[in-house]
Length: 410
Image 1 (cartoon, rainbow, N blue to C red):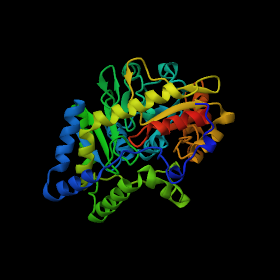
Image 2 (cartoon, rainbow, N blue to C red):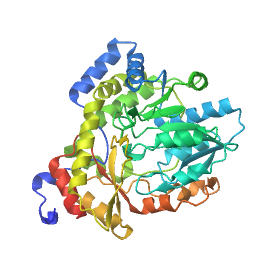
Image 3 (spheres, helix red, strand yellow):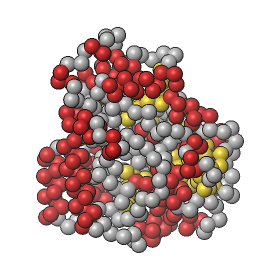
Image 4 (tube, rainbow, N blue to C red):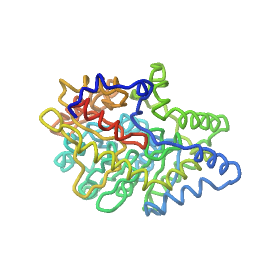
């Protein structure tokens, strides 16, 4: 990995850029999905049943997006609670969609710090939770690394607090042999564009509780249905996504700054709506290959672990002992003095590395007046924001790409 890659970019690499995330969709997937949508009226029910059976839950509802799913899950728990508790505990560093879902549900965000080595909650932060104020704890399984759900559920349930197992980024992950997304009172999956399984948009709510399922159903049944114009837009996005995700094509959208690829913004103006059933066939086809998709991501992550130059300036993010990651991306921690330069160098060499979410949640300007923090602050979350880099693990990543990542980082 000590090669000077700055002078080793061949002409065939000049128009090749590895996307930071995504899942390849083949021509066969496209044609088969469009055909199934045209000739079958129950493609969504088939997809729901496949998810329910695969992960072993009794109830499964589909909605428009993953963040809509989290919002609706919190609204359902809020209704069951009768509005007595109004705080939701989330990690100090996570996707901005998590606090936006809390706020959209009319609840308050309470931050608990994270351990930079695992990106999971610091256990002591949860041990102090007040069950008279906290409605739910949201475990976010960031980048496909399962959170310590056995401990989180025990600590929360001992205090009468609900748990949301937000596996939007962790479909295919496991803890102790149990699928991520099935540990909490409610689980969440996402089929957004950057996820391990995609239908361009889509969210799933899972539960084994009769009461929670009824509360979710009351929320979902009043949602507006997807209009034909929206389905046409989703189909167009699907075709563009399938064509442009390949590294030989992705350089083009990546070169257009007005598309805002890779940027993260806090927003609460997203719709709560029903799932677009026209997108169910493509999601179902990819879901049927989940084991193969996840195995490839794990293999790519394992090879990066072997190649990267670990040391004082570069630390790994470690999964839990009983965790089997899904590796939506491969996260590492780089010394803050080097982080931005490394990301820029990787991008210059055609690798869609990312500094991920631009700040810790406490530093999101729109949330400055709405946050509460557990004792001990959010130093771990802010340290992660200064150091995190995520590397691509999807099916378009080649051995040469991995060698280049390691060489540039080195």
